[in-house]
Amino acid sequence: MDFKRGFMTFVLAASTAIAGVSMARAGTVDGSVTYLQRIAVPPGAKLLVELRDVSLMDVASKLVTSQEYDLTAVPTDYALSYADSDIQQRNVYTVSARITLDGKLLYITDSAYPVLTRGAGETADLVVKPVATTVSGQANPRLDNTSWTLVELNGAAVDKGRDPGFVFARNGEFSASGGCNRFIGQAELYGNEISFPDKMAGTLMACVPGLDTQENDFLAALARVTTLNRQGPLLQMLAADGTVLLLLALEI
Image 1: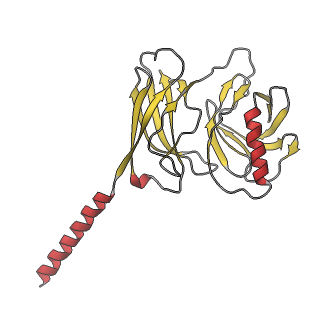
Image 2 (image 1 turned 180 degrees about the horizontal axis):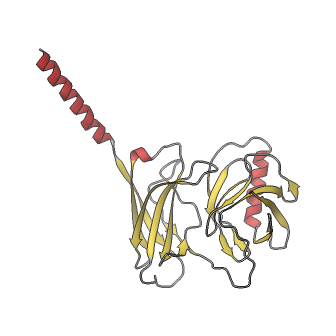
Image 3 (image 1 turned 90 degrees about the vertical axis):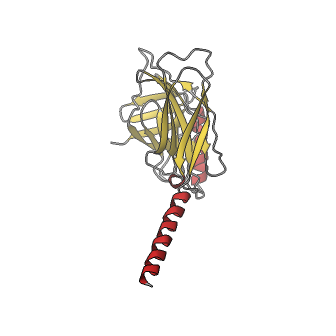
């Protein structure tokens, strides 16, 4: 009797283990990468494609998986495999790509490409854009690895919301907030000229009255920004006509 009970316990445990293995499924995000310039891919170029979790505010995005390719021509296909356990349906995921040559960044995506959750699919065709270099003699606002608090928006003081302002990484990568949701993207920098992307990945929280208007004004201002003017710990973001749209203070 004890032998039968022990044998059945073993069979049940084995069945449970097999079932657990069968539930550990995997998926794939795939698509293509290209750029619009009519120039050949330089010999030795590398393509890096990443799948990231961009759900959390005020922290860097979390890398889920990535794949590097030897790039010989565009467009080219990519495929990123992931485990189902890596994906949470309530979170936000995007794919991005960059092309490098001997470690130097040549092209990068500057728009958000959502995948997997919140109505997004498993396929995304990416367009990368050339990275502008700083022209000798132009002002360099020195934004890499800096954090800024939003002080004024359209000439009015900003003193409400959750950490309104910017965090800049390198090569124009940034996260930004108008006081409610947080957005991430890749800005194009050319000396003291800057252009923010039309589409950005971001959180989807409902904003309380007042903050919703402030956030809309913040995003509208970003779309108009063309020039930066840094004066020590202060940074102005200006429109094409010289109007100061945003005034920010450096966080020490």
